[in-house]
Length: 230
Image (tube, helix red, strand yellow):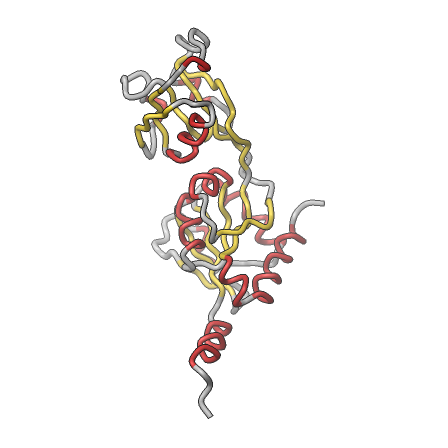
């Protein structure tokens, strides 16, 4: 007897490997030891930055990994392209998606989302008296929420990189950007004037997948939790 369509779909889904979305770049390098402790070993060419492959099998037949831009992890997970992923707190704050659940802080990728401005003008004005300000950032939602909470209208200049150039070229008075050491700010004549949020990387899960494949997702979360330092 044929199975009902819904039940047949669920069985087919259960046989499909979970997809774990991982961010390219610095965080991926920090993730390496954690993945190993969790018993997750992607295919040999996963660490080859010149490889054009983006999806890789792992030693677990029930799990594949994909390598994507850090800002895209939350999008892949929110829309179900990946059931689980690793995303920075900055990405989650900016996306603010109800479909993404972040059950575990991995404690890696420590940095902060901060406001910065030219050292030459820092402290010369009282921000509490501002009614509007121009801000260059790749975090328009974070910036607008931050300044709106103070009654300030943020006019956003949306840039995906080189934010540090914006004040000197007259594009914006301030920037809101991710800061790790502050050396890039200093090299471009800027100073960090306010920390909006401390950031670490989180394990994130698609809420629908958590309902449809609870055992597989819970087992993977448990592996990551066990892999964290005591």
